[in-house]
Length: 346
Image 1: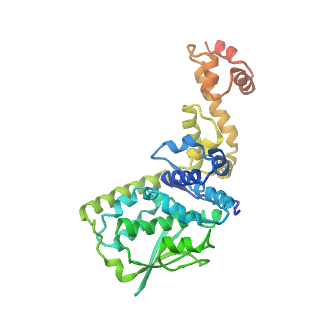
Image 2 (image 1 turned 45 degrees about the horizontal axis):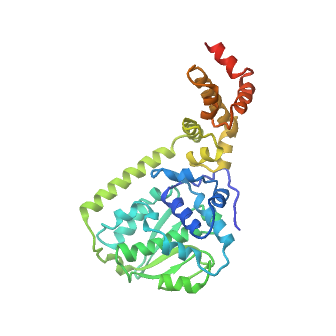
Image 3 (image 1 turned 120 degrees about the horizontal axis):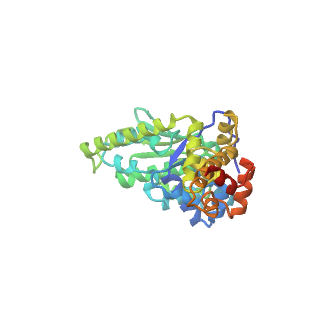
């Protein structure tokens, strides 16, 4: 098992929901229960319900860390995932790059819009006279040894072959890690030479093949897709500029609107890890739990100001299992009971 304690400037960013959703589906297919997945990642099933959501980028690698810990080595899990997952795990980018004129344009499209997939995903193209390297890396690779990134690379190979129909463009593969299962699984799936324990993770293309036309190339649709993802990228960048404390406070408020005051739900909404959220709160002179309690108190006072809402209903709306727990909490916050507060308010 590999893990890292994050540094002060450790924001791993967020990732499009398709990636953690696909990873959860694969983990379930491998026999993990939802409870085990929640324990490994802090992710709760309802968090996967919003198709436009972006979740903390450490969720997929932490799940891969758990999967590797369960593996007996009889199957190359990253290969199995890349073989079984839908290409939509790479998000809508697949639908845009299929209209590129040539293979090189498709790779540049992926590189240009990589932040749509994950805020801190770095894709790079290094061109040579005979070979061109398509290189990928993410800071979260430190969590799972790059297993999630490895799956992403294998899915990209499928895109090149199945979507772009460039079946002979790839010369070889280099992986920054040891094999996770039989090497024969890698060989049968990749169908090109593969080398492990390399300094970086990359797909090596035949440079001349990059000018091969893509059968579905369409200049107008490709330009439209490029503009669409550029606009999406700008919205993501704008969201990332929101101060962390304000983002966390908004996430808690949004959860309160649906009666969800769980810490795990708040940090997911804020695109933060629990440690990062605690540090953000501490820098503001408070704690994450105090922020949640303050939101509960504010909502409790607002609900109690409406005489048509019973105290039992207020307790339910605030996420308490019964009204007695709410009454104790309210007395702790205000020094008075909900009934007395309501009478005073009137």
